[in-house]
Length: 93
Image (cartoon, rainbow, N blue to C red; front, side, top):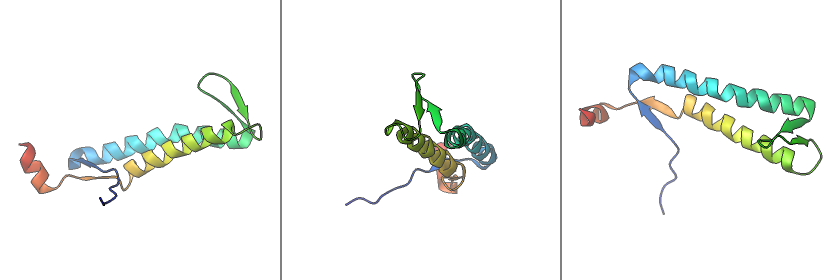
């Protein structure tokens, strides 16, 4: 069986900090949407319909989708990005 590999992004050191900052900033709008939905009890879908808390599973599915995006961008912005190794840098030249 093959090993499970997590998503990793390898960048040059000069781009690493900016990439991490951008990925964390991309996660913020998703977080705000989830926060507002949990506080108000309703969320707007892509089609413009309003899903409310306790009215079927649509509300929870949308919240889980947003949380998945939050976790993905936080992962890429923190532990999922690393500096290129010296051997990778030599291969690209």
